[in-house]
Image (cartoon, rainbow, N blue to C red; front, side):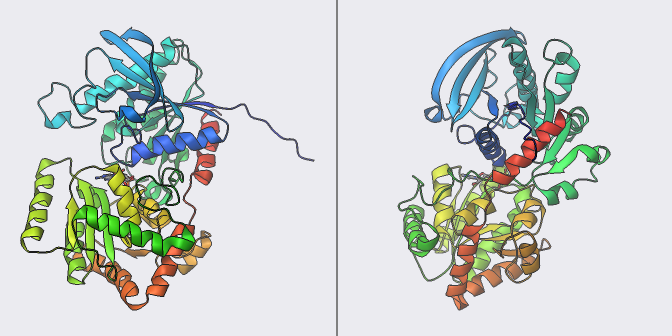
Length: 465
Ligand code: ADP
């Protein structure tokens, strides 16, 4: 008989500057919430610390109340607590007002005297100071990307020997593209480093902020929260549907999407969706090309995206106007951030396009599949780990216990994306039964946090060895 080893539940404090749905910019926000929930569901204690932005979605925070604050950093820091999607969350609100600037990121673009790096550097330290002053001794402090990377070094230099002795630090790279010197430092000072897919881990393993730390560096593919993204129970959709009602369900969602987008509903042609930040990473040039290619092939297109760079935002606004002026009534570009609309696009589209130049994990393709929408993606990072090509990846899919669920392309040119997009469109036009079967494959993939949460818990334990 084996002896059951009962490990004490871990206490994890996640220090983050994004958190879905109250302060979501991209995938980082989703991961902090849904990983937290999944780790909590395994019996551990999870708390998140977040800046108290003026732009938080306050109506989505339950039981918000003021706790004891602390004097530090030249001012008084108020602390609030609340519950977000079931995760206990603490908000730091310094009297210097640096998180009351009408935005999460972007002060570098404005004439506000503090950069994002300075504001989040302050927050990283303040979070540690709060742990110390509130008498917490978590087992794990989990910090994320360049924004809270400073936590790792500051913890070991200024806190570990000065009253906050218990924690070990886990650092997750959601995107290596930003703040690389901070990332190097966090890789050096954390006990475990992770990133959000195996392929991305491999792709960045030669990078000089990581290559000397490979022994503690792990790739864990992100999950999505199956309750937040659930076609069978989604307040943003006009109907609910499951795998055996996918055709009718998606048809109703498509009708709502077209009406919301002011385009006619041509139910017998593919509707191609795009939900993305509009940045170079996301393959803007391929997105633009694909919109025209899809229209040329008689498809409809709905894009939801916003650009942090005002020039890119303007380019897309010009493109939206040009499409309208030229009577392309089958394309709608929504150039802003809109969470409920994103749900409707995932549900109402036949395909989702994710042609990223690089993609640490990518949530968009995972969410799309959950709603029975076929991903057309560039073979990179987490896209390569989660999408299995309909024509080429049967063996690879089987190896992973999956079935082919989408279309992939290599390369970065227009003809490269055409190769994948054309095959997806052809399948829809030529064999709709097979296309529907592919949609069912997508819906039956398990991209929940069940497995990845266990991987993280194992890594949390490893960080304490
Ligand atoms: P990244 O973190 O690089 O932005 P991911 O694919 O990992 O990319 O995560 C993006 C998340 O943000 C997804 O949940 C996606 O649905 C959402 N998203 C991106 N742009 C928008 C937008 N304009 N409106 C609503 N949601 C968006």
